[in-house]
Image: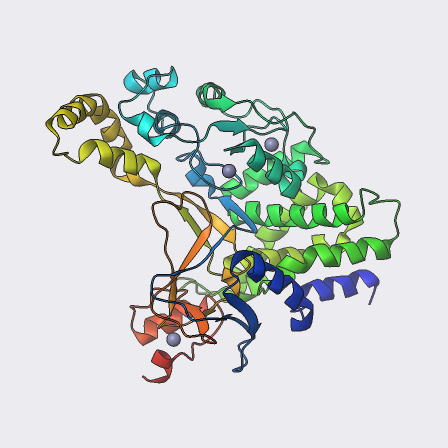
Length: 451
Ligand SMILES: [Zn+2]
Ligand SMILES: [Zn+2]
Ligand SMILES: [Zn+2]
């Protein structure tokens, strides 16, 4: 086996617990000091345990995503920070963005584009739209801090730079809302044309590839940072050591190669063809990403191996990874449309509704559309499944970004394992069993053992 084959094998193998432990301790101490990650006694691998008693409804942790991305289709509906996923701009910008992208051009939409203020909207102020320091219109941010963090973490390699993408109306909206953006920067992408094609391919096929690209770029940038920029002057061994370090957060996430492990949908008859098609799709995507990140692909070849790329995709597709931020437009509309007792406010509400009725009609039933995407949360992904879980993901009105928020569903004793349900646990045993096939295991929880 060549050293490159060995490196690929290393990246594909589950990480030894002792190697993962320092990283896991670091996450719990910063995110959830009341919890610890350790090996389970029943052979499930690792699990998350309470160090101390926790009462019902108590917050277990709030965790930012290691890597995530808004769904491509959702981006046309919601203007959200590409780093923390909060809504940005203003109520007016949110409504105008969505209706413009859906092809509503006239009347109030046009006036919104031109800066019309809607009644009560000042009570729902949002952070300004901060544009990408590389000048692309693919991503927007809520602050310079988020723009800079994304640039450092992944976007400096994935940015297509200044371009003429997006319609004139979209540009007007973005420009109108744009606050002073970060200091302008040059993209480090090796081939912007290939990157643009990569992005279009992901939008058209499976937007999980966007998340995989962010993960790949993140690993490259962390490895480069350890090499202090001397990516090509150092030897292969040094590059490999840096890559191993940078890979650690992903090695900790449970993973398997996407097309080998995903459950076959019921309507598929030919399993081999189905798996081969997924593999081809991933290969086509990687073939576009490689030239876009040519410098990194030559410094860290093992990371750009198809099976390693497949295991990164698998990590996102095979974990419990939905990211949701509730709609601020929904809160705004409820504020205007729910009758208040105070007659003076009620009169203002009626006046406001005259302006809002046509917009509300155009928005239709999906006026409450949340910001949605896929994200990987290091700590949450260590929590094992149970059909009778003692914790659940639950966001409150103050949770306005893409963080995972976990609450105790009932009292939890010190030393007890924390569990969540990966599926709708109200289903019957057989349906639960089938749903869990997607996650690649058979549940041995109390409910499943006692049927
Ligand atoms: Zn942000
Ligand atoms: Zn950019
Ligand atoms: Zn179960």
